[in-house]
Length: 201
Figure 1 (tube, helix red, strand yellow):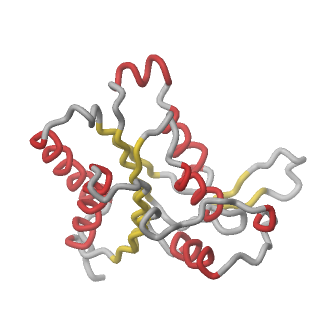
Figure 2 (figure 1 turned 45 degrees about the horizontal axis):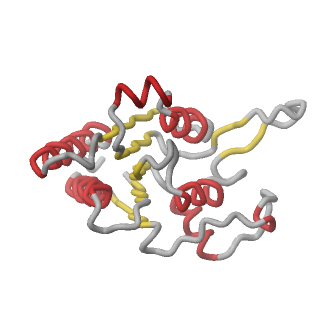
């Protein structure tokens, strides 16, 4: 299975980085082919210019590579912190620029201008790992957990990825090393559950 792991956190010492490395290592141990994108380390440009808006636009070779990586993926893993109830700007830019019309989705012809989408991605599963410093009860009560809606409904389901799982680790800022080790073990277990060991046919 080809799996894409996308990380959006500026600090390689962060718990997000540890999550991504755990997911990457576990996928490799399970025999999957993995492409890892650390968006900050790669200097991904999140700015979505007007010249890229048309679905038939000729995008630059770097962006083409990101698009091809996404299109060829059988599964996607995304890792990022919860900043203001949203992904970091660099990851929002990745969504804007890479999850493109005619790459990840298209609109039904003759839909009366309603924008009825058809998902084009071949990926069957998506897993999102988030970190937060808000307790889960308050996240639900006060904010309504907007990341769940964004990733599950607005992005992956729209693009045809129907199997979705998300895990939020919180409260990170007060967590102990022991707690983080438990969380990383859970990351490995979730990856193994969602992307079982590759076996030759």
